[in-house]
Length: 270
Image (cartoon, rainbow, N blue to C red):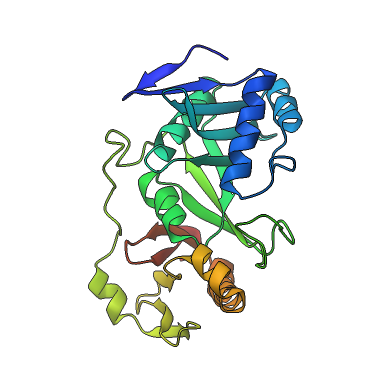
């Protein structure tokens, strides 16, 4: 491992050795509820990615592994973050370590995917980091059998993060940026366009045709465990809104504290 960087009592290191990479693989197994014998990212795969020029960052709370992230260089001189998972409050630290690594290589853009139904991840990616949802991918991974995604379809939202333009909350990692770039009253006045599986409004479009607002369930992971059929209905409903909006040139730019995406029409599509 390289020498660590201390930030608020937390140590962050890039990991190169077999034992360290095995510990990261075990961490990912625990996060995604898979047996450690079949991790989502085996240690030998992580070792190959590092050998090919990628980076595995690990964050430690004392001696305890509390998070990790994997990134590789893309053909277009962007970076792709394959996976990141950390204890609550440390995700921002891990992503900034990835950002610093990429900037050190002269890279200015990073992309990754996440489940668009997980509102807390959307808020982290779009609001705290300032990334933009640029692509909606239907059933991206096909069937998944881990303990988090099993029984659902693996739709993903690609986000693009401009590394050269720090988000508004960059200087204060513990302070979240404002939840929205619009007045909540504007959202409430926008005409409803879709109904959610719970019978309440799912999506709205403002009268100026500049924003689409789309709601996600409060906790899709818990819903998936309790009622996988209902969770799948939410998947299809949100998919319809996003695919329609993205086809018209909208991109995901925000997530409110109460679970509503903001999709903003791009200038090119205006």
